Image 1 (cartoon, helix red, strand yellow):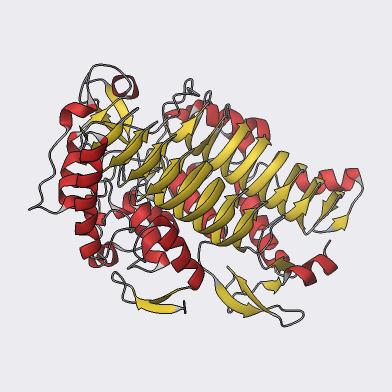
Image 2 (image 1 turned 180 degrees about the vertical axis):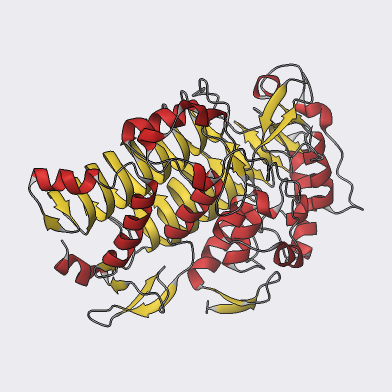
Length: 554
C-alpha cells in the first residue's frame, strides 16, 4: 500500500498515513485516523488533567477534598476512600444502548453519572501525608507531585520517580537533594541541570555525566572542580560558587550568563540512548519507535508519549508497562488490545472506556472492576455482547471513526486544565475554534499578596520564618502563591533563593525547555547531514548529528 495523504478533520492540515500504519490499523481491525498526529494528541490529552487542582467536597461523604474536577463540573466525584468502598455499585448506573441516539452522546451521559475518583492514586502503593498529588503513588511527605511516585519529602515535580528531598524536577528519577532539573537522573545535589546523569553537588550543568563539584559547565564527562568548563583548584572554586549560591539576583544573573555561554557548545540532535531505528526525543532502550517522546523500553511503537515497556502500540499518552496492542489510549497500563480508552489497568479487549480495572470484553463502560461482557455498564451474555458490540461498531464505522479516540465533546476536562495546554498551548479563542472547551474559573487567586517580590530578601540566609505566613505574587503571571514550611527548610538546607515565580510558571518553563513535541528538519552544523530535531532551524544553538557529537564530545 502507498503513502496516503489526508486532510485533518480538526485543523484541516495535511498528514500522511504510511504503509506500516495501514498494516497496524488492519491488525487492530479499525479504520485509519481522520485527524493528524498533533490533533490526536490534543484530543487524548484533554482527558488527562494532572496539575490543575481544586478544593471541593466528596459527593458521597461530603468531606472536603482535593480534586482534579472543578466544583462546577457535572461529574459525580468521590474521595478515594468512598470511591474504593462497597457503598456504591457502578453496574447500578448501567443503561441500554439506544440505536436512535449517537453512541458517544450516550457514553458522555454515562461518564457524568458514574462516580469518578477525585484524583488518580495508585492504591497498590498508598501515599502518606501527600494530599496534593495526582497520578502518583508510593509517596511520603510530598507536595504538588504529578505523574510520578515512590518519593519522599519532595515537591513541585512532574514525570519523576524515586525522589528524596528534591524539588522542581521535570522528567527524572533516582535523585536526592536536586532542584530545578530537566532529565536529571541518578544524581545527588544537582541544581539547575538539564540532561545530567550520575553527577554530584553541581550547579548549572548541561548534558554532563559523572560531574562532581562543577558549576556552569556543558558537555562534561568525569570531571570535578570545573567552573565554566575550566578546571579550578578547590579553594578558588569554592570562593567563586559561594558568592553566587543563595542569592536570587546573582543566581538569576549567572543563569543568563550560562545560557549565553552554553551556546558555544554543540547539542545532540536528540537525547535518545541505546535505541535502534527510533525517531523522537528522550527515547531510551527502545527499538523501532517513531515520533515518540519520553519513551523507555518500547518496541514497534508510534506516536507514543510518556510510556514505558510497551510493544506494538500507536497513539498512546502515558503509562504502558507490559502493554501491547494499544491504540488511541491515555493512561492505560498492564493491558492488551485496548482501543480509545482513558485509564485502564490489567485489562484486555476493551474499547471506549473510562477508568477500568481487571476487566475484559467491555465497550463504552465507566469505572468497572472485574467486569466482563459489559456495554454502557450493563452486563450481557457473550452472545448478546458480541451482537450489540457489532451494532455499535457499525455506527462508528459508518462515520469513519472506529479506531479514533473519544470526541472532545465528552472529555471530562477543559483544554486549559490539561496536559494539552502544557505541550501544545492555545489561547481561549484558538481552543474553542478547534472544538475544545475552556475553563474560565480555575482556582487561582490574584491581588491578595502581602509582600511584593522586590521586598523578599535577596539571600536565603536573610529570609525570616515569617515568610511562611506571607502571600507572594508570581512575577510572570501575577498568581498568588505561598512558601510552605517544608519548602523553606529545603531552600535553606540547599542554599537556594526563594523563587519569584509560582509553581505553574516554573513548570511551564521546564516543559518549554525540555524541547517540546515538535520536530524540525535541519542540517548538522558540522557535516551538513540532514537531521530531525526539536531545535528549529532558526534557533541559535549549534546542533550536531549523533555521529559528529560523539566524535567531538564523547
